[in-house]
Length: 636
Image (cartoon, rainbow, N blue to C red):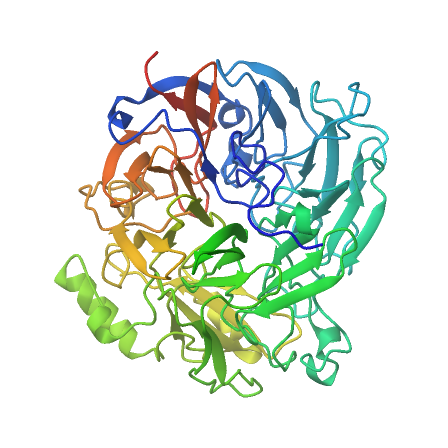
């Protein structure tokens, strides 16, 4: 029987027991002790340091501290980027236990050392309350799934082999770090469901992004879902055998009452040339709903046809309830790198706002066949910049702007969905979004979605195989990838001015938005982030810039509380902020010792509400590195 409404295991959201707050990924807590009238009084309640900055500085330099802790009774539990799991006292920050799986810190992971979170399996309510009845699960950078006793942090030896299951990729790996698990496992019933993060653009026939479900007690594999369907007509001419990926690297979400798990899938390999995988590539770049107990497909919707833009679905689908004509509708909201929100009835897959197939620019690259249209919801409108014209160019100085203009005139820029080209194409939003893995938060009473987005441009250039060595010899700041097995390598670089290394598109470079989910209307948008920590580097030294409210790109997501506040780090300055959910006005900001490229969480213990965030920086964002977990609260 299908059930309606917010049918989640911890529906009242009184505790942050999942990576996204609850199984639905709403990032909402009912705590209201902290509110717009007193938030200015927030102070540091405690801080904890993992010690990684001092003990493993070289590994920290190749990491991103993206974790959001969970709280289970009297334990605040999180993982470091190196998959150490730590339990703290949530009132004092004192360490209770620590587990180290011993990953190889000399290895080179596909996407930095990352662990976004751990997951909790409560066991059986009437089961033995002894060792490993309830468990903490984690996926690792070296593709293990590990089960730990929640109370002690010791491995649950009956799970797999000595408390762990090693994932086996579909194809042999080029190096051990090519395949990793970066997001928290998904728990539903007695299953642990995991996706994967796989290195992009190395070869066309990369490992496949198979999703796997394991028995939470024994580690036995219960089902798999392979998004690449060999006999599907939308993988034309046998092209399914010449590609890989379509993985689920972002977090998943669960409607346990209706036995549904929701998967945000990525692009097929390689990202920027699809000539060997003609067709729409069904289930890639799609929101996929599976029967959680069996892995059977229930419905899906593809948000990008035949992706050549690296527009993965990067964020956890968020399950919530919409209200229309006096009725409650069970919904799922998917944030995208294109800055769109796709909103569906989560039981049927029916769009809750009309989705149009709109004509888009077509490729001029020999061998490529791009989709003539792409799906765009009528509401909500895009939350980020779409495409770039010469009028959008900007420079802090006349020299900067002239440089940007000269480079722009040599590139292809035909608006949103401009495909990669041989001369170089301007891709806006850039491959980091729009939205990214931080996803959205939902204010339940008002049915408002809060989402932070980035406004940057990439230059994507395909390089004929015969010219690759010449490009390598003259390489500048661009990233080069082989795309082996195809006629083209690819270069990717941010569209920045040569002089000051600042974006060539006009501000804001990042913003935060509120969307009424019932009507689809944008309620407010505000620039998000300052330039204080974005100055250019000279001989490795960051030059100061005034703290201008130009907005910055962001990595991490928002938290919404019943007190009417949004808490968010994420921006590329070292601040945690509190924002009024109704107006978008910033009410409080706190300078942090390192970059808070993570999502905060909140809970109440001993009558006191705490807001907790990881501040450890992000290698790709070039923010201040650290190893902090920080808790803020009102004075006692």
